[in-house]
Amino acid sequence: METVRVERGTKVSRIFAILAVPAVFALLTMPLWGDPGDMRLIAEMAYYVALAQLWNLLAGYAGLVSVGQQAYVGLGGYALFYLTGVWNMNVYLALLLAAPFAGLISIPVSFAVFRLRGAYFAVGTWVVSEVFALSASLISVLGGGSGLSLTPAILREISPDRSTRDTVLYLMTISISLLVVAVVYLLLRSRHGLALTAIRDSEPASASLGVNTFRTKFIVYIVTAACTGLIGGLIFLQKLRISPEAGFSINDWTVVVIFMVVIGGIGTIEGPFIGMMIFIFLRELFADYGTIYLMMMGAIAIAVMLKAPMGLWGWIIQRYDLQLFPVGRRLALVPTEPASQP
Amino acid sequence: MEWLNTIIQGMLLGGIYALFAIGLSLSFGIMRLVNIAHGDFIVLSAYVSLVVSQGTGLDPFSTLIIVVPAMFVLGYVMQRGLLNATLSGGLLPPLLVTFGISVIIQNGLLQGFGAYTHRLQEGAIETASVRLPGGISIGVYPLLVFAVAILSIGGLQVLFYSTRLGRAFRAVSDDADTAELMGIDNRKLYAVALGIAMIFTAIAGVLFAIRTNFDPAAGPIRLILAFEAVIIGGLGSMWGTLVGGVILGVAQAVGAALNPTWQILAGHIAFLIILIVRPSGLFPRTRD
Image 1: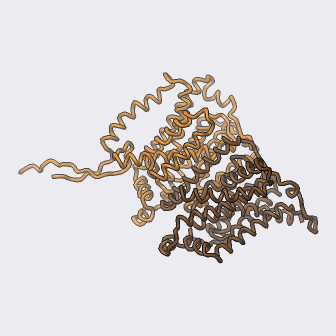
Image 2: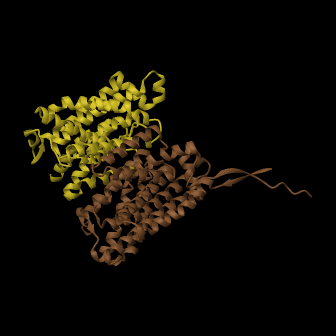
Image 3: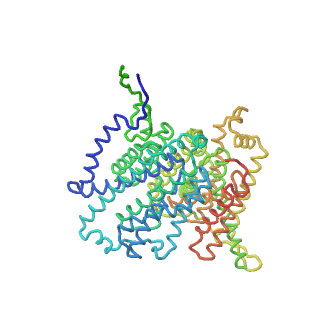
C-alpha cells in the first residue's frame, strides 16, 4: 500500500541546510579571524546577493522587469544621511527607518508605473529613478549635486574605535543581507510564494485559477522597495558618502544585478548566489584592466540569454534536479504500514 | 514675447529628440525590439564620425558618407547574428541582450577613448542665427536639425506607404506569423529594419555631437529621451514621434526658463504625466 505525501524539502536540500549552519557561523565569526580586506569584500558580496535576490523576486517571479531599483537604493541611502545628518537621529534607528521610507515612496510610484506593461514598465521605472536623482541634485539640504557625507560624530556613535566599527558594520551587513535572503525565501515558501510561482509560469493561467495577480505584484513591489531601501542605507553607511550619481546609479545597482540574476538563473534562489560569485570573481581577476570585467559580464549575460535562458542554475536543475532552497511542493509516494489484521 | 521665444526654442530642441527617437521607434514598431543600447549607438556614431574626421580631415557632415553605411551594416549584422534570436521569448531576452550590448559599447568606448568629453566642430553654422520680427532669434543649426527630422520622417512615410519594402514592414508589424506565411523572410526583413533604424541613429548621433559635448557615458540619457518621445507620440506613429519630441523639448525649455537646473526634470515629469493620463501615448497606431 502506498499513499501520496506533499514534500517540501529534498535529501540534497536537507544536507545543504545542515552544511549551511557552519558556513553562516564562519561568516559571523570572521571578525575574530579574518582579514579586514576580505571582510569588506564579503560584505560587498552579501549586499549584492541581497539586491540580486530582490530583483529576482521582482522580475523572476512577479514578472515586474524593473530597471529602476536604483531609485530605492538611493532613497534608502539619502534617508540615512538626511536623518542622521540633519535630524541628528541615532544611526541605527535611521537605518531601520530607511526601509519603511523606501516602501512608502514606492506606493505612489507603483500607482504610476503599474499602469505600464512590459518594456514601458521597465523604462517608466528608470525615468522615475532619474526623477529622484535629479530632484536630489536640486535639493540643497541634500547637498545638491555633490551630495552628503557622514560626519565623524555619526561614525563615533557606532564606535569610536575604527576596527570595532568595521566589525559592527560587517556584522550588520551580513545579518541584514541574510535576513533579506531569508525574507525572500520564506515569502516564496508561503502561500504568496505559490501565487508568485504560478504568475512566473503563466500570468493568465494563474489569474484564471483565482490568484489576485495585481495584489500579489503590488505587495511584492512594495516589499522589494523597502528591502532595497534598507540595503541602500547599509551600502552607503559603508561608503560614507552619497551623491545623486552614486546613489541612483543604474549601472552599479541595477545593471550588474540583472546580469548576476540572469547568468546565475532567473526565477531560482540559488541563481543570484552563483551570478554574484561570477561577478566578484571576474572583477577581482581583471581588477587591473579597468572596466573589462563589466564588458565580460555583459558578454556572458548575452551568451547565457541566447544559449541557456534559464541560467547556470536552471541548467543544473534540468540535468541533476538539485534544489538547495526548496520553495516548491512535490508529491512523494510513501509506503504505509499494512493495515493490522483484526 | 519671452515665452513665445522659449516655446519656439523648445520646439526646435524637439527636433533632435525626434531624431533620437526615429531609430528606436522603427525597431520598436516593426519588431517590438526594446533596444536599450539605442542611446549608445547614437554616441558610437558620434565617435565613428570623430575618428573618421580626425583621420581624413573631413568635416562632420561629410563623415556621414562613411558613418551612415557603417552603422547600417552594424545594424544589419547585429540583428541577424544576435537580436533575431531574442525575439520569440518574451520581454526579457531582447531587454537583457541589448543591456549587455549597451554595457559593452559604453565600456569599450571608455577603454578606447577615455572618459574625456569630445565635440564635433562644424564651423560657422553652429553659431549662425536668423532674426525674426519681435526680437526672436532662431539658431540656424537647430532649424537645420528640425528640418532634417521632418525630412527623415517624411522619407520614412514614403518608404512605408509607397514601396514594397514598406508594405512588408507594415505586414510584419501587424502580424509577423501571417506575414511569414505570405512569403516574407522575417529574419532578413528585421535585419534590414535595424539597418535602416541605424541610418537615422547615425544621422542623429552626428548632428547631436556637433551641438553637445559627448563622452562614453552619454548614451543612456539619449535612450531615455528617445523613449519618452516615442511613448508620448504613441507607438508606431512617426509623426507622433515628432510631436513627442517637440512636447519634450517645449517642456524642457519651459522648465529651464523657470530655473536652468530644472530642464531635464521638467521633461521627465511631462512624460510621466502624459504616461499616466494616456498610457498608450497621443497617437497610438501599433498594438504592443
